[in-house]
Amino acid sequence: MRSNAARRKSTAEWVTLSLSLLVVGALIVVALVEESHRQEGDAGGLQVTFDTERVARRGDSFYVPYRVLNTGSEAISSAEIWIEVFDGERVVQSAEINVQFLPLQGRQNGIFVTTHDPESHALRSRIESLQFP
Image (cartoon, rainbow, N blue to C red; front, top):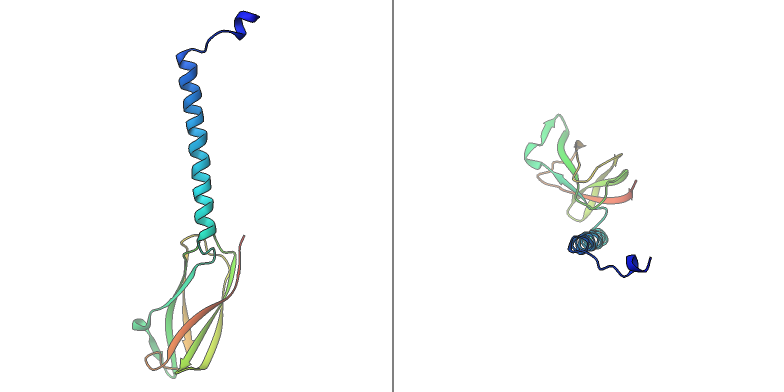
């Protein structure tokens, strides 16, 4: 029994132990870096862009294409977004958009219908609420 306990480790055992420690250490570092990026990043990074070059006019209505893009660090299970039409500093129209699921880097396209010409009015969006899975 005593000879087994006093036996020296072979080179293969030392190499295996060293590689195992290196792999475990690398996994811990990667996990810490990923967690750090997740906490620093804006979890609910939604971008709403309006394509004012492709506006279609039908009668008194203007159909403005928009895109919602999830640039955050998490998927979004639902979001409430308000679109507001401004005449100078005054809001002349507002509407609510509900997005039910948007994965990482996911996008949703839609059409916003307004009675105000987007060339003479400013369109802005604001995130009212977000829910995460």
